[in-house]
Image (tube, rainbow over all chains, first blue to last red):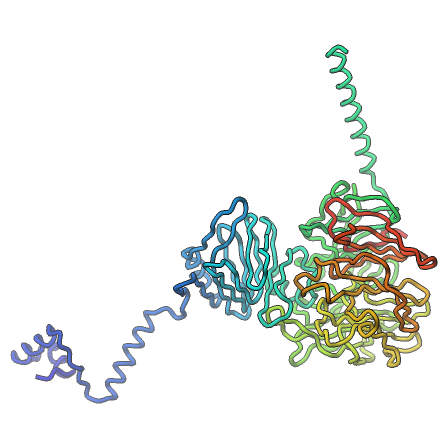
Amino acid sequence: MKVNADLLAKYHENRCTPEERTALEAWLLSSDVDDLEFHSEKDKQIAKADIWEELDAILPKEEVVKVAPNFASFYMWKGAIAASLVIGLFGLSFYYFNQSRQTAVEFVAFHNKSSLKVNHISSKEYNLTIAPETFAEVNRHSGIIELSGSILISPKKDIELSFDGEKEKVKLKGGQTYIILNSKTGNHGLIIVNEKNLISLPPVIQKKLIQEFDI
Amino acid sequence: MKPSIVRLLNFIFVFFGIVCFIACRSSCSTNHREKYSIHIMDMDAKEYVVTTNNLDAGLLKPEEITEALPDSIFRNIIVKDGFYYSLQRKSDILTKYTLKDRKLFAVAHLQLQDYNEENFLWMGKDSLLLSGLNNQANEAKYYLVDTKGMKTLAAGLLDINKPQGKFKTTSIGFVHKRKDTLFIGYTFHPIIHGANYTTSDTMYISRLTYPQMKRVGIQKEIRSTYPAGINTVQHNEFTDEYGNFYFMSCPGIAMGNRADLPTAIFKINANSSLVDSTYFFNLSSSTIKNHAYGLWYVGNGKAIVRSERKDLYKGLSDHYSTSHFEFYLLDIVHQKVIKKLDLPLDKGTRKECVLVNGDTVHIAVNSTTDGNFIWQYNLKTDELRKGLQLGGVSAFIVRIDRLLN
């Protein structure tokens, strides 16, 4: 006996003959699965769409946290999910290994795709504000940070950071706030200034940073 | 000698030491009215203001004289007649300070609204014209302030062109007053991605009537871009003895970032309301062969320019920390470079570091190898020598001002 939608409906409405019932129950228990027979291809498509809709309702609207095999990657989206970001963030690993006095950041990655809002990160070692359209990734093995965009970092104690393309490590003092800017396409290289020395930057960049970071 | 006598002598020595120390402290804490104000920054970007009557010799260590300035006061400060005027960036409050016990002490405040400072100009002894932009940097505004009572005399929008099309923000480079006319030089910038900023290839000079602030004319200038700059940080404009107004374009990376265009001096003649099309002192194509930021008039048709050395810095990242700035004496009438002053290379991207006192020009130089000195250049004898030294925590002498006349 071929099991089809009509038969399943009859079974649920308790209208099956004893033969039909036996056959259907055998089919339900059997691991050999035939395709479910639909009245038409259209019905099949409708059922398929329904299943996807149901799944969509269960799944999160946007992907929040993605962990790549080699990195702890942290993807940041719009301000609307800021709360979940913060929770996700604390769950993520920020690894440090202690040197005698200074601390080197082993890896962390973030991406602020918003074109308007900044993201705030607070860790045991520092507070970080990530400007719109900023991406940074820290290599787990080399510890080198690849940065595109601008960040505001306030270390809680002296730290050392290594940036892609820079020979020397950057030493940041605890209790100070630094602006770090980098642009892959620009010709300016990595720019690190104490927030108090913002005036030494070109006025056009100053205005952008003042607006972005509200400093 | 008996131990008890030694103890007594020790006591007397310590006692007199304390008395002398207290006496010195109390005499030091009286309010000296000194002539010059020096603004210093240390390696942690903490700032200090110290005053002196003597720029010619001696040694000052800021940390021994005063305390670091609070974080709300920066070097973009206006100094006049014993007072300091500083606009707090976040609160838009203009504060007037005086010196008390060698520290800045607030005496009055004035609340401004949605205002970022670009330029200042004294219209009279107690009237200060502040020209700037809203926080979006796309609308020009002004405040005319009575600095005696710290009150707004007039305020409003400056009727100059607004950024259009791909240009989103404005930079006001200079505001110059001549009789009843204001000349406002400015340019525009497109939106910035990352650290990639640039400037329109055109500068604009709008003319407004003063004090009505009505638009009467506009001129476009395309021989270079980014006219002058933020003059609370550094001057790039001056008026000579005959009323001719000069301004320098600053298209180098520290300002306009249109390095393809030259750093050049432009002139608006005293008897004309337009930029002189026959005058164009191109510094980038002169023996200087570089971009420059900072231009000061020293009298008799001469000026000093502070120019960068692009072969000595890597980029914007080390532009302020590397010693690479040179000072040149210019003949601005005949558009000629007279000579390079024999000074050590200076560091710090933009500084108000030249002060003229008759025939003497005081030039503050921060050299990595030769220390921080205020040099003296004698315009008559051409003699150049070291004057006051700034020691201790001093890393940059970011401005020298005449505090009292």
